[in-house]
Image 1 (spheres, rainbow, N blue to C red):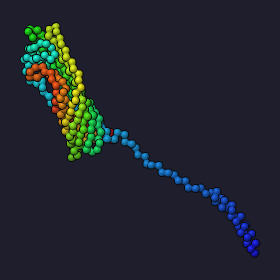
Image 2 (image 1 turned 45 degrees about the horizontal axis):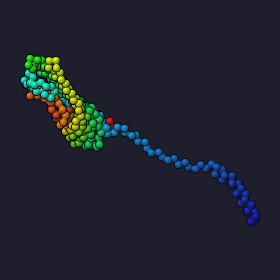
Image 3 (image 1 turned 90 degrees about the vertical axis):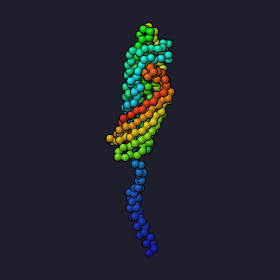
Length: 252
């Protein structure tokens, strides 16, 4: 009886072996796919902005100038000269372009390159019956780094205050003539400058703001030639009071 039972179990095991083998052959282990990190595009230019400005300088140093006698010892060996005519060209409009960066909602800075108004004048007269003339021209370029504090936004306006430092490049040329004699003076120089700023901006479109402000610009050692109440003058030290209107375009 025991022998018969063992034979039955043996046959049963033999019959089940192909089924188990087939099940093992059909089994596929699970495939674990590592989930990729979500792609986040890099915001190129986030925080940066471009700006352009035009402005007006309040400077009437040539208006209502009365000239009778002038000393020009700095440039030529004749003195005095009786002025018979005087012309000046002093356009008070200037322009600048630059770029900047928003560090946060309250602090930003920008770098600007600008051309200040060119000043030109010419005079004509006589010295002891001999015709004499003189002409001069001042040209100034600026490179300025300004920092600003935005004081919050109220009814769409964002007031700000700021200050800056930079370099002023000056080119001064003066020519004088007495009869057949002539003398020339030329100077090109770089000098330190600083600015004080205040104003407000208003967003007129997405990423576009209008900026209206006041800027005081000073370069204590910058040279100049000009016509004043005492005649032709060579000196140092520039001070400009400017009203600026510009556009800012944010690159974010």
